[in-house]
Length: 236
Image (cartoon, rainbow, N blue to C red; front, side):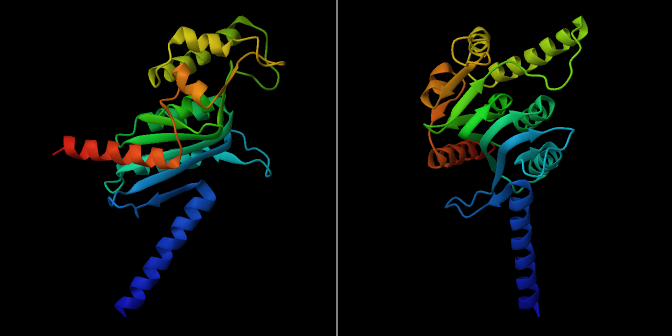
């Protein structure tokens, strides 16, 4: 009877992990040689804010991510987290909320940029303790874009400026780039034909100071194991 109950529990746990990965792009990994419990978070497609996007659009929903991050922080079982990113950007408030939440986690966090980290994907790419980018991934750094009708009044411009400052400050605080250098990249007029901004590919993002290292999933996991190990030893 106990064996049957154990099998049922294992199936339920496996089903939960599968559902989490399918619905929220998250799962727990614990088969590494160190026995560490790693939480995997995917940030893909467009960051969805207060308005729902179309059914054919791949999105990362902040109302799914934030509670999961709270669970990661509260759980004694999670040793660290790895964040995989491939995002075109999206809702600024939602993206910045996720980035702030990740940055405030007490467990070690490593981010790995795959494909692209555009717009609000830039602060999301640098919000961990250490950041990686694969050689072919791109970062598009540009000013805030507003959709829909925007009243051309002083108050709106001031609000946009404050929001821009929040993104700049967060990005600089969590990377090695200087504020002036980031502003120059953001307001560059020589690269994008229909917009201002800069495209950085792989090593260029590292050279600018935005990302710590060029590397893939193997390097990201090795770094995370090292950070977890250092934290465990510092708590002894």
